[in-house]
Length: 157
Image 1 (tube, rainbow, N blue to C red):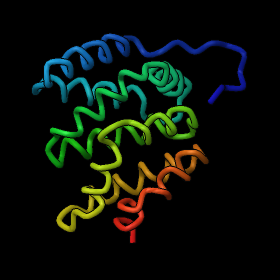
Image 2 (cartoon, helix red, strand yellow; image 1 turned 45 degrees about the vertical axis):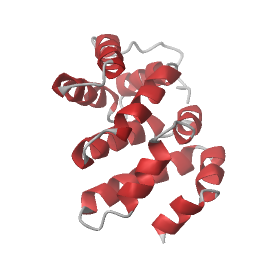
Image 3 (spheres, one colour; image 1 turned 180 degrees about the vertical axis):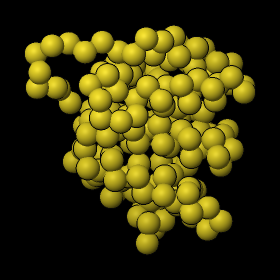
Image 4 (tube, helix red, strand yellow; image 1 turned 120 degrees about the horizontal axis):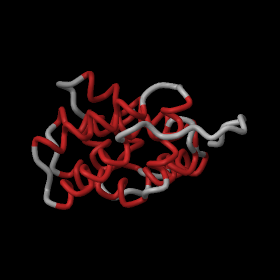
């Protein structure tokens, strides 16, 4: 979304470096440092400050970032998947275009379904609920897409 103020808010120092390193690491299947960068990006997009909003908007202009997040999810441990889902939920918050992009990202919805069925992890189910809420709340197209996925609807029952 757009801000109503006419001044331009700059992204956080280091955001582009974190995103660039994260994407480079993901091209090489990631490693421990990958998760440090996921955490770094997450810290920069959390909250409702003008800078966090500017950071989310900057990342939203990088569709390849979302493709890499989907790929990362495919091989992520349950804890890592929760971290990625939380990052995606922060990026989706009140952002229609990003929400639509996320639901169309390969790997995201299948992992959401798996996490929704995880009876051993309340936190996983909470991350699923948070992400779905932010996706559907920001984008009617994302809400319709989610509602048309039988596996997702069954998982939510």
